[in-house]
Length: 314
Image (cartoon, rainbow, N blue to C red; front, side):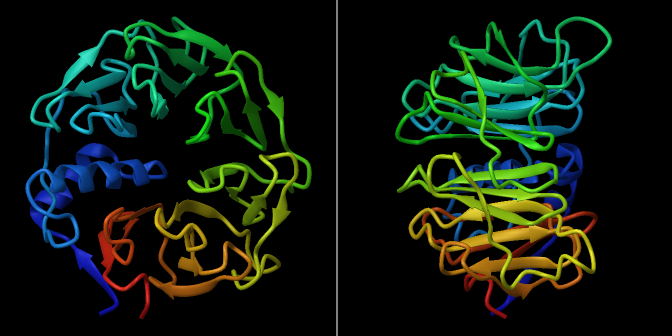
């Protein structure tokens, strides 16, 4: 069936309000969650707009895995900063965090959902930019240091272990953010733009960069190896990865969204890649239906959301 474009008035308005961009993967996941409250996300043809306070562009989202009706949204405008819904998006309230900053990345502890991690921007008043941690659902935050992160992932089996992509480095903590080490061995020059972790084997991680393409670590980030076989030639143009998604039922299947060349797919854990469509389009966000992984969503600037019903085959 190929890639089908999902563009109706509600979808267009919702994406415009949310500031769909490099952090759009989380936005897509929220859309799938909202749809599932009414009907199956695998069969629904429309997105529903949920509203929310006037906090500007939505840059980050975190869903409570124990209570999916609870969602945290990070705003670009510091007026609201962090907003929250406890009823699946029917209503939203601002959390007075004390951080007069844009919230760009959010992560939630699956075993203790009151523990949140956030990356916030630096500014000219108030608190520092960088990584913060809350143990009371966002009511108050402790500064963890480092700079603002462009990507953040948590070990699903040990939530004390996190990885943060910050500029040209990947940092790792094994104690919930109290201390960090760099885990860059083998990682070539390039801004870390995306991180993902194998849900069945957390020692295996994937990193996307804005210049040198894809990398894999099979030892918890201790070393990294480039995995660009089948991706566009690096010598002709920087290999800019904007989005990364792993099939939750079969982690050997991965999708990457590129700035210029659309969506590529790997069926062997990144050993090789092949194009799946949306050629010559910039893909900033990817999401996989957790109940039907053959349904894949891709978000593009000024073009809405595309859906493949057959795992990206065209």
